[in-house]
Image 1 (cartoon, rainbow over the protein chains, first blue to last red):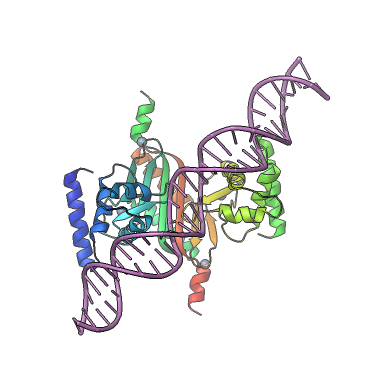
Image 2: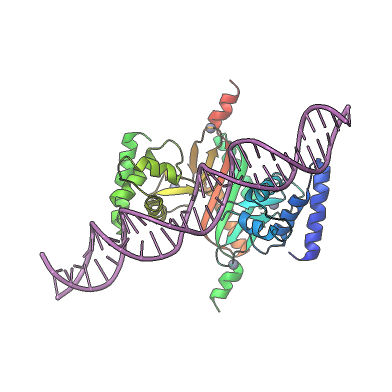
Length: 151
Length: 151
DNA sequence: GACGGTTTTGTTATGTTATAACACAAAACG
DNA sequence: CGTTTTGTGTTATAACATAACAAAACCGTC
Ligand SMILES: [Zn+2]
Ligand SMILES: [Zn+2]
Ligand SMILES: [Zn+2]
Ligand SMILES: [Zn+2]
């Protein structure tokens, strides 16, 4: 994410938190920035390492607490299959999205596919299941990396 | 899973492995039995604990190696969102299924929903994404537990 | 049935991810 | 202000997973 886009995201996050009456503290802000600046999904300990630049001797709970907050607010997502975190591409509205995770280059694409959402909702209601959270992660090779194979 | 059903599953697993020319060794067999006997998803360390009954002083690699084999053969599935393993409900054919995981009672239901599969495939091909593995886990409250709420 | 390659297992150690618990500080609110 | 709530610092530990290498078991061939 370039610095311009990052600024937008941070501004949007500030606004959202203000609206919701929750506090985007400096630490939470830092973690959100680090996650969004990163080109790739970041593990909690990756983030922890980066925090050493701005925080003295941070410990795991520091970063996990910030991540918990950001997850609750829908500002970041956790990729369960790779134990890593990414900034949300469109935090404005609540959503459960889908992730295309390239096992080759590590790139992640967040989708909000209505057809997938619909089919999931149908299956849930057919089972009488009340979802709280949806994890949809497709792991494979992205278009760019598939192209590279042919070179 | 009752003992009759377990026997069926084990027999089916034996047959599948024979067909494929891979070895369902005693350890792998034990792990598969333990996973299938369990009412709930089992963590690797849960399995490890149970193995102490039949194996002397088993170590983590023992159980992880067996699980890796069983995952490759499609005899068990890993639930990424809860770091646990379940026996496959229908190992006969290769498939990527969906899981309804009750956060309340821990029960897991494995679906093979064609509409979900279709919508995922569509999204993948629209993105030029070549999937290797699909993780679809819906976490919430099952029908039974929802019913209990009303009592 | 001895040989040699391959696969599986045993064992020790370590790496990685995540949380518990409790003391302290800062902010919110009357 | 004083009180309550919320956030942070710190230490320790729990939970999940793999690396590395030696020993054993298996499998095809001679
Ligand atoms: Zn999002
Ligand atoms: Zn790629
Ligand atoms: Zn299955
Ligand atoms: Zn339930």
